[in-house]
Amino acid sequence: MAGTLILSVNAGSSSLKISVFQPTVSSDTNRVEEPVSLLLTASLSNLSSPPATFSSSANAQISRAKNVKHNEEADGVKDHESGFEYFLDHLQRETTLEKKDIVYVCHRVVHGGDYPGPVLISPESYHHIEGLSDLAPLHNGAALTVIKACMKILPGSHSIAYFDSSFHATIPPHISKYMIDTEIAEQKGLKKYGFHGSSYQFILRTVAQHLSKPISQTNLIVMHLGSGASICAIKDGKSLDTSMGLTPVDGLPGATRSGAIDPSLIFHYTSDAGKISHSATGNVHVTEAEDILNKRSGWKALTGTTDFGQIVQGTFNPSDPLYLKYKLAFDIFLDRILNFLGAYYLKLGGSGHLDAVVFSGGIGERSKELREAVIERCACLGFKLDKRKNTGVDEVDGSVVEIGEGDAAAKVMVCRTDEQLEMARQCALDKDPST
Image 1 (spheres, one colour):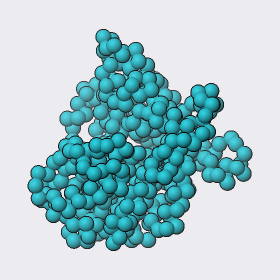
Image 2 (tube, helix red, strand yellow):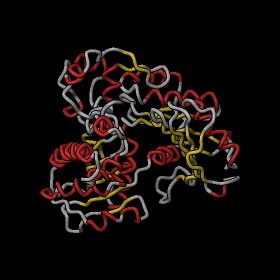
Image 3 (cartoon, one colour):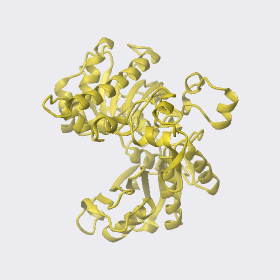
Image 4 (cartoon, one colour):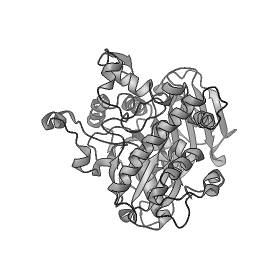
C-alpha cells in the first residue's frame, strides 16, 4: 500500500469531506473492475462556527481501534486548514495508513472558468483559480484554503483540481451566452458555466452502464437535488444545458440560495446590494447581494430550517404549526424543478429520445415524496412511477435503483452519486495525472 494512496477532498463553505482510496488496477480502461477501492471516509462540520465535529468510518483492515466515529468534537479545529490537519492526525494515529503514502490529492473546485478538465496545481493554476473566486466567492475560497494547506503539509503529493464546471464545457454558445454586450461578456467571462459536474459525470457513467448503452448514445435528464440543487440535460453523453449559470446561485432554489430571480429584485430588496461587507472563506469577501442570495434565501428564509426532510414532514402534516410555510417551500421547489424538467424534455427531443429521468443528491435520493410529486406531474409526458419501488429505494443496494413502471416512455431512476469516487477514479485511470 506504500506510496499509492489517493485522497478526494470536497470542501464546502463550512464543511470538509475526505475519502481515501487505494488504486486496484493499472491504467487499463478495458478492465471491468473499479480502478479504486475505498479505504476510509471522514467529514468535518461547523468549521466556521466551532465547535467543529468529526465523523469517520474506516475499513477494518486498516483501523487500529474503533473504526467508526460519529460527530465527535474536534478540538482545535477552527477553519479548513486546521480541519485538514486534524484529519491527517487521525489518519496517522488511528489507521495503518501513513501521510507519506498519499501520492495524489483530488480537490473538488466548483468554478474552473474555461478549464475543460482537471489541472495539476501549480503556482500558475493556483492563481488562476484564485482569480475565479469573484465568480464563486463562497465556494472556490474553501477549496483554495485546503489546496494551500495540502501543499504545505503534504509537499510530496500532487494536488489536482477537478472542476464542477468542466463537465458543462460542451454547452453550445446559443445556450451558454447571455444577451449582454459581447465584448464585456468575453472580457469578464460572463456566461453560463454550470456546476455539480463531478456528480453528473458519475451519474452519466453509472446509468449508461446500467442501461448497457455507450455513454455517447445516452440521453438523460438528471436532477442533483440537495442543499444546492441543479438539473442537467445530457444529450449523446454531453451536457446540453443545465440550470445553474454564471454562478451556482442561478436556477433552482436551495437550502439558503434564492435560485433564479428577476435580476433587479436585489436592488429593491436592499440599497446596499453592491456593498462589500461580508467575509466568505479565507481572504475572499462578498457583496451584500451575494450574501443575501447565497446565504439568506432559499427554504431557510421561508421556513427557518435548512432541513428539507423536516419541510417534507410538515408539508404532509396539516396539524403542524408551520404547515403553510413548509407546503409553500415544497411547492416552490417542485414548481421550479418542473420548469426545467419540461424545458429539457423538449430540448432532448421528447418521447423516444430520452433514456431516463434520474433523481440524485441528498434530497433526490432520500425524498420519496418529492420524487412522487415530480413524476405525477410529468404523467402527461409518459413518465410512470411504481410507488412500491419508490418507497423501497433505501432497501435496494447498488448505485442505481429503477422506480418507474416498465411500460413508461422513459425510465425513472434514483442514482446514488459519489463525487469523491469519481475524482479518484479519474485520477487512477489517468496515465499520468501529475501532468
